[in-house]
Image (cartoon, rainbow, N blue to C red; front, side):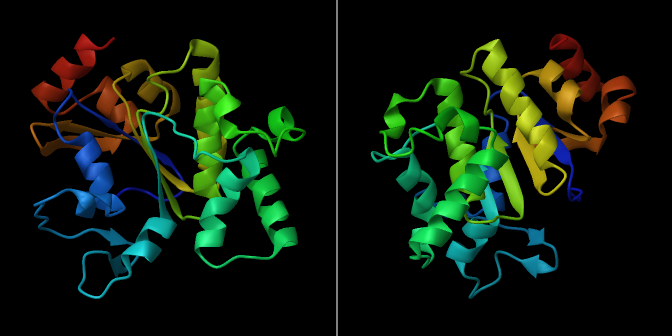
Length: 226
């Protein structure tokens, strides 16, 4: 299957069916699981990311992963965002300031923290932390953004804010979101993939999958979540 660029693809399915595992395969975080074995092929553009000799660090730079539980590094807001660029060799303070501001603006957090950049990131609210993690991922200029249930722990207002940011981001990035919230997928997804027991059962345009699913298992799952 193909995941269309500059759009939002929602991966839906019951707990334990393989959604998060699939995300971790796309940016090769799955490599960190002891004893894991991966078969098959994943291409980003024309590049096969499991080909021998591929720079895994570069893959993870191109494919950002925003986890379900937002976690701030034990440092300032500024240093949280600057961490990735510094890791990849950016040491110029002026350029780092530009990267930090641009990333926070893109994540919709700049106006809330612009006067607090030297404060500990741990003092942010949960909703702000999730957008901080998004800004941290954006700072290394990825091509693809993966979201693993990014709103599962957020209140309704913070959820709406993050959904709005993801909708804006699809103009520039390819976005893939794992969600258990069928309504959320209906609100923001352009394309949908239904995964069940480790297999992709159905995928396609969101309107088609939600309104006229081809597979009985898809219809049953969607119906149970509405």
